[in-house]
Each structure stands twice: as structure tokens, then as C-alpha cells.
Image (cartoon, rainbow, N blue to C red; front, top):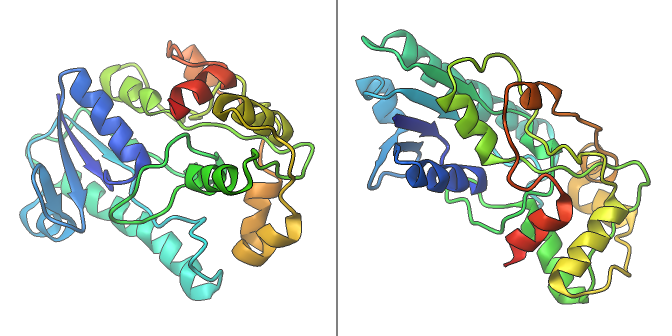
Length: 252
């Protein structure tokens, strides 16, 4: 299949591109930066949708960028970065002579963290695993965020490929693992085991709030319990359904 990925230069986009290539698919990325196997958003608007069988939109400003202040201007930028790119892709799809077979939107991924990668996003630098791995290397301990009921879950590019390849998949799929009830303490312990460091030092809530602001810190300190009921019902099989195996794969 020929797959067009909006915002494909980020950590999820790169993992998705790699997986699609491994399965014999062709990938074109829509990005602000031109390059090989890429088109820019301006080119998409002016020239329309290139020939493709599936479109995925991953574009959006990183909501947990610690270098941006949490103010009204940044909040508007976060919203517009998702709405505008979705509108541009939807408009291009609507005007295409041969529209794609699949149209996949990814939203809310910042709530499902940390991502198990330290990749650099050319369009929107940042990644939650960077945050955790840096703490591990500097403190030589897996960071433990306070909050007994915080759930840390992993977005998996395999679910996106499943949605692209399977014609029967429709509606909303939660991109989390079956073991999404893992708490921060359990995640910290598993991460410490994976990197060979003890999970001893807690990350103080005031520090998180000082860096990310009151509203954003809730995403790190509290979280949500999300169950992939429809994802499993659609026939998707997880490569790493358990946290420990996923972490060992990530750090290796």
C-alpha cells in the first residue's frame, strides 16, 4: 500500500514508517521540511492529495514540551496544530479523484505516556521517554512520579498498521496495552530493572508543576485508566502485551 503520514517525523511517525516499510508498504510524509519521500503542507494544499491508499495524521504540537510556557497562546497553538492539519488532509481527501481506502486520525497521545523511545522529532522536538531516561542517567535511578492511581500506557504503531490494513476496522480504538492499569510505581520499578538501576528517588510533584504548569502536570501526576476493549475485539494481537517485555525491548 501507499501510505501518506501527516506529521510523520515524530517518534510515533518514525516507528510507524519503519513498521510499514518492513511490511512492504510505501510511505510519504507530510512535513514542514521538504526532503526525500516527503511533501510539505503547502504542497498538499496547492497540489492536492498524492496517489495513496491510506492517510494517517499524527501531526500536532507536543503538549508536554517543557520549553513552552502553558499560556493561552500556546494552548491555541496546540489546538490549531491538530485541527488545521486534519482539515488540510480531509480537504485533500475530499477533492481526490481516487480517495484512500483508510483514513486514520491519532489524537490525545500526550495523555498516554511515556512513549518508549528517545527519537528526535524534526518538526516538534521532545519525547516523554527522553524525560525519564535523562532522569535515570543523571540520578542513576528510575524516576518515580508520585500518585498511586496514575496509569502509564504505551501508544503502539502496530495498532495503526492494523487499522490501515484491515478493512473491517472502524471507529475509535484505544492505543494502549492490555496492561494499562500499571501504576507509576510499578512502571518505575520495571524501568529500573530494564536499565539496571534501582527505582529509589521519587520525582517531587512541585518540580513537575513548576516545569509544566498546574494543568499539564495533571497528565504526568494523575493519568487515566484506559482499556483497549475494541482494539482487542478487532483482532489486534500485541507484540509486547506486558510492560517488562516492552521496556526490555525499548532499552535494548
